[in-house]
Image (cartoon, rainbow, N blue to C red; front, top):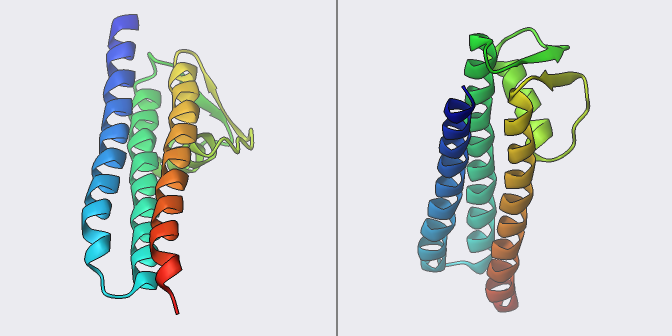
Length: 142
């Protein structure tokens, strides 16, 4: 069971990182084509936020399926077993906010720790990307 859990964790993390990489890569190619510098920053920020949301939903689906299976642990507390509750939990973990009203038990805790780490890295990566975009494009604003 441990190997299956590791493979699931690796797959979820790989998909999240790939989504983020491809989003930033695509934005870096597309954004400079926009005519107005302020539109470049706005489109870049929107794209980055959408990437984060998709990544959170990938983790949400993993929590939903793993907790429904039951053999990998569960989400307890104020959790009704819905995908929306899994998404709420994932958003709090990804952003390292962690309200604590939903708590993982069992092996599912490992994915939660990994999501916090991935969220931190992806947010930092996005901040770096946005800093560079703003530095390139906001100097042109008149």
